[in-house]
Image (cartoon, rainbow, N blue to C red; front, side):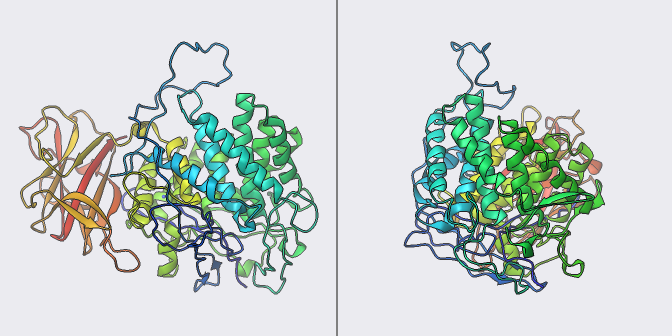
Length: 624
């Protein structure tokens, strides 16, 4: 019996540390490149643009019987907003209604965020919001509902994170979001039964068990995506005392109330059904928790107190069905109660995008503990991360999927990772891994322009979560960065930095692998790099490299006697065999730290590549 063909993403496993994934809808994005399209939980196209160039992706069934929808990316270009210099994120943002705020004191500018050579990801996020808003309209194209839900969530995340900061686009974003709500409201009465809700315009046998649902059945995936987007917007509107707060909240409340009759309570918690059909009274965690998070947020933003009665039970049920511990990480199933035990299997990393968001949501409300978040980080960094930043494991227990599925699912994995970037009890390395996954599986993979690019609705939410959930160590981006070029081997006069050790490296040159970047190419199989640390620092250091390689390699650290492998550096070929740039993340080994250059300031940690086919564009390092 097949688990529903649905929204999916990827997964992760890592050497010497500890990380999760998705696949789903799509939107509008840039530079006229043709890419494959995201699908909703029932495998339907959710391309945000769905314009003349939109091509729905094929649905693939993996070897284990789980039909998963593959996502695609065909986007319409839009210029990005002007770049603004980054400031840091220190200091708690204030409530915009705080009467003690002195209006004469300028607010700090909301900071930019870099991902390798992409230096203006906030600008990319703003441009993508505008582009997707222009392209998406469920009232015209019914399959856009979940994509518009992603878009609303992205706007809500950005505006909530930017309270207390200067964000010139704030009023514009509120108006864009309200216009999206009106488009959704206009299409919310098409499902069978009571409105408002969202579903599919075709008949669909979600679980492959012969219980085909009629066209316009309501599903928690589409309905929940919209409801959560509306709820995140209501949280912002309520904080701003916006005149549209009440009407928008009423729409959100009606969306979650539609599911009141489609909820089951069990001994360990409760869940909302997969659809309104009795045959779908199944605990599919990633769809149930969408309604749970929306309901809880609405109750916290002036909605009826009764809305808070069931959400925690969804988190409790998920926890009760999980296995593992905080040290080794966790595994959980895609579907549990109401689904045959023999057919249950670990959740694919695509669907886990939402499930892991609920884990962070539960921690923020003290439903879950720091210890549980430690286990989630171990899952993201240790089970799902493979060392290949563009190809995660297929399932949250570390088992593999079909190769094509893993390539596809990884592109959306960033959402689940980014939500945990600053998680209490978690691991800030998760944030940097999220940046590497987004760069490797999407931005560089699809030749996104370094300036002026836009991304689809799924990656728009990923960017919003990265911007909003920077851990303190990465508030201003990576602490130290060195790009190949003049001075990239400069001896430090004070501790702190990263550099090339230019013996065994070619001179810097611009190299192409889709996008063009300056880089040095190793001239032997033992070319070196250095990370310079303060002598007194004995903590963790997260390092990333933006590199190109035609063959598999490794990166090792010198202990004064021999090298120890830190991380794989897989060949940077995509699923088609085309050479691309990757950004990979790893951690220095604290147990073997050695000062390679005693006469140079600080502790100079020596790293070595194992192949001469590697070109390195950028070295980044951040002490935690």
